[in-house]
Image (cartoon, rainbow, N blue to C red):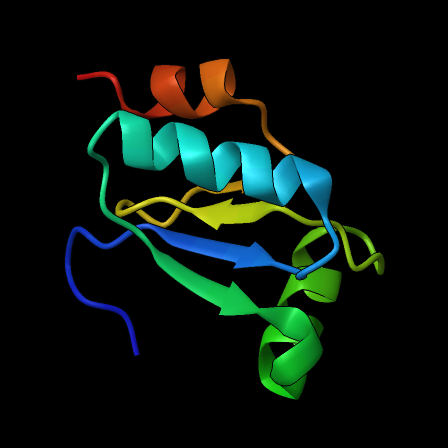
Length: 82
């Protein structure tokens, strides 16, 4: 269950792009909740549904419900800008 204003980051342990995005979010003091899809069948199903059938990570769900698939930090920054 998500909280209002919460950013969800779907990841896998072995995903380098996931590690880089999480580090960037932490350095920017942007709070998020990580959901590892290898540990969660429902999360894996969600990621596949929003990415055309692929287990594409990182997948980011923004507080307004928009979904970014495999975003780079600049795309997340732009999406969060007022």
